[in-house]
Length: 212
Length: 417
Image 1 (tube, rainbow over the protein chains, first blue to last red):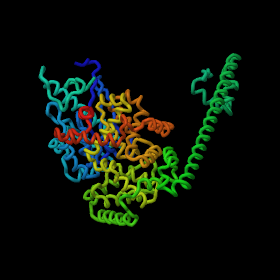
Image 2: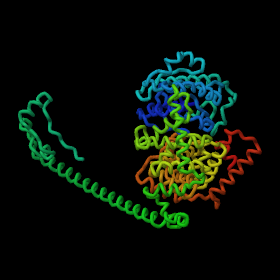
Image 3: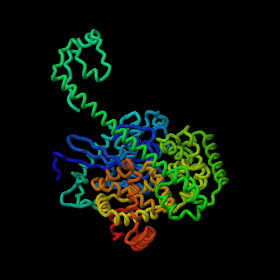
Image 4: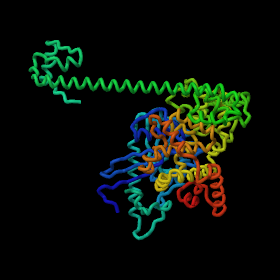
């Protein structure tokens, strides 16, 4: 077991959603605290690391910024492996990007489950909320209900441009990831081997989550 | 810098008054430092005056030294620039007078090949690229016009229908999205920029010409670089032929099996040329697709500054697809020492945009030069052929799922041994 004084958590988090919804912008805002209207299209996958102090523990978030074009779908899905949480992003000014949300969620859930068989914690981000709320208001969608029905642990109206709700959304996700991690640790019966998503690397035990 | 003892000023409220009264207006730092203090303040002691003078002289001498050094550096820079300009203008002359007029017979001459390695002069780059890419597809300017008008018809019919954006063919929306974020720092492709329509035309015409491939992210940068170097129809012809090359087609169609073959072949050479880095990457679980996909699809316009990427294109058109992977090894070799001390996410992040250092082009190309693509005595094409056989064999032996086929370290180590 780890020394509780300096516990470090390492979580892999996916950022997915249709192209151009602002996935890269959200990550840049969250990690580098800046915004540019001109990020280049993500091809394949990009990466970022965010370190948080969380109740005297260190949380390191590996953010995997996955290309939005459907063509890359089969290719980039292998990057879902070992993720502990996800953001699914849509653009509030583009209804089509919201319609794709359920597709992304189903895809994620079908490709990725935690060791205890549950789905990974996923937060829905309604991005570009500084540019209007068309999708949210016009369709009469009840977001709370939508989240419940589709298994999101929460949703936020965000703006990478105006720095709205990004930290809040991330904190919500981290909170849920930690809860599910605890859940798994407790449900684990001693002296049994829990099958993992894949073979363990370098003898790390399945409950350590590569935290060291 | 030496520590200056600052004169003690009286508290702030007296200060503004005294300044007005005394009309103390130093003309320069000399005055500030060497003049006596204002009469309302206690005078400097002789010792202090002496110390201040010394400190002041030291500072002036230091500033002069720095200025001299800076001037020398600038001069050196100018000299270097003149030298480069001369090299380029000489090279341009040779290309224009001796090589280009007899392209078919002189392109493989030693002189041409050597000149080519140094990078093509911008003024002839477009012509040489278009000659080297060729036109296997026999596309004419007229054919381009036909596909362009089809694309334009599609755009107008889309903008006529209400709510066009959501009903639109995804590629149209996609192209519009991507054009706005193509080389944003150059400010020429964005809406209102001089090359905006040109880029849209070429990509739109291409999706009409090759609906089977369609628009794939990464293409906008490729077309943009071509537009920067040649005319519209010429750029379309080069673009279509370039995307039709086996390597590009494999990646733009996201053909797993073919891409994997490239990754596996690359792994063989990585292990051979940079064994320590290969092992480090393996221990991190960093498979080459994590960086190569981006590098190949963007043809190095994403990881490298534009001028360096263009030089990689020069050599890609000289040597063929194996140069793309040799360039990858060159980048890894150049940054090997830092990469060896990084974890997975840092390596992946680093490789998506390595730092644009001074003289990056020269340093990178000497690393590429030091990395001949040889495994034992096998060349790229031979190794590629062999890895293909391994895949076919192992596939027939035990049905591998498409995901597994992907270059995961486990699969790799089991296969490449």
